[in-house]
Image (tube, rainbow, N blue to C red; front, side, top):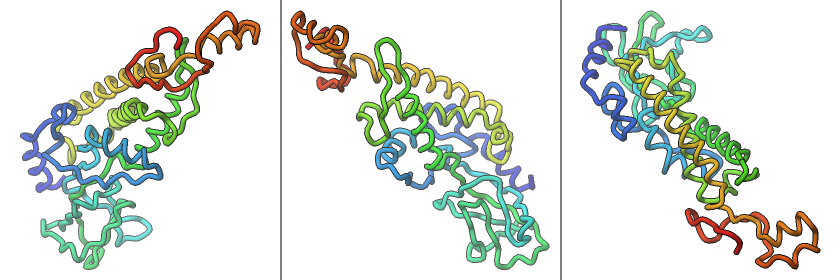
Length: 282
């Protein structure tokens, strides 16, 4: 790390901690307004869940700032520089300084954010350069994968009072939004807490060990919440059980129907509404 980056890291020690970030504040080296690009997936529902429910808890990590990273020249093109993380957030302009701490004019810098690279039109191949940038640790494509995996887990979860379903993100009931968001957050914080190289990067975190422990604890909390919600979303308070008439036909044939009364109904979404338990037969 160069002298300039070290001083900036020291200046960030007084910033809000990661613990504040988990509880709703802003963490990291210094307060950072999320510059993450809006989620752009092939699913309108996925976009809504990410934007309305997931982006808030993850906003700090969708706009992580790296201070004065020593850019590496690529082997395939010595005039192309590569940085450690990508994609860059376009809302935060890439800042490049030469080895003498002189800022390179943005007009001379071309950024390839999705690839994590940049080039300098005035570069003669003999200087070292340092870059300050923001990157999105949780791009929308990754969050969409977490959503789809959570949807698969919700479909497969079943016990004596639930059953297997075959919903997609678009066809699942509206009340699945909460469990899907919680499942996505559990997977996101799990990935975050196990990325040891990220926490060891002093250009991002002044004390990565503590921050990693908090992320791991948060992952466990979201996981426990998801485990509870994924069964609750398919139990009696959300799904109307089969009527006795239906059960009698399934078990004994038409001969058993005369002994029962009630609407003929198999498993279906509870029309009364989420949170209102079904009691007995309709």
